[in-house]
Image 1 (spheres, helix red, strand yellow):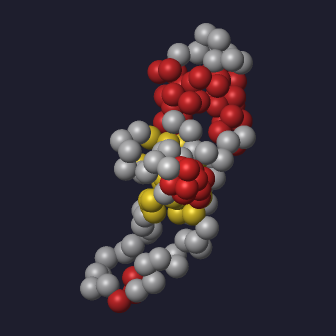
Image 2 (tube, protein in one colour):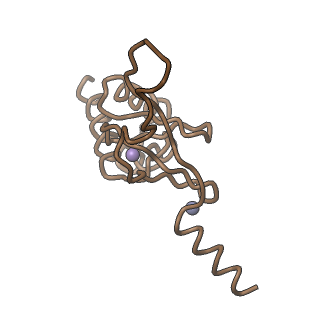
Image 3 (cartoon, protein in one colour):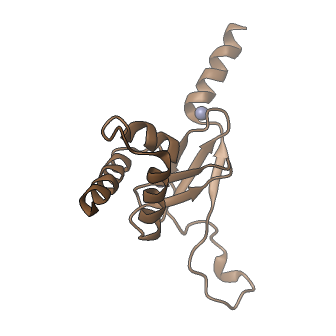
Length: 135
Ligand code: ZN
Ligand code: MN
């Protein structure tokens, strides 16, 4: 039985590693079912939670109320498109923002921060512009 459970976890981890779009548990479930037809959404969710607790993957909260998962555990920023909902890595070195953190009037120990950027992605921006031109 332990083999079955670790196989499920390995498949879930492998799927996440093949994605750069930060899938939801639902997305993972839909994809994994093609390989493991008997798996349930609950099992997928439990495995994602376990992997996140073990630090093998990261659970992201990006303001849309749905958990997204990232195989990239390095500290990095994300960009959320308000039009299409896509989530991409934001190309800014972690820690460059906010730059004045050492000036903050705070004497505790800071271990990190969570920031996400949002707006319109390049793809949606192009579509909007094209629609604008044909009107
Ligand atoms: Zn978009
Ligand atoms: Mn990411």
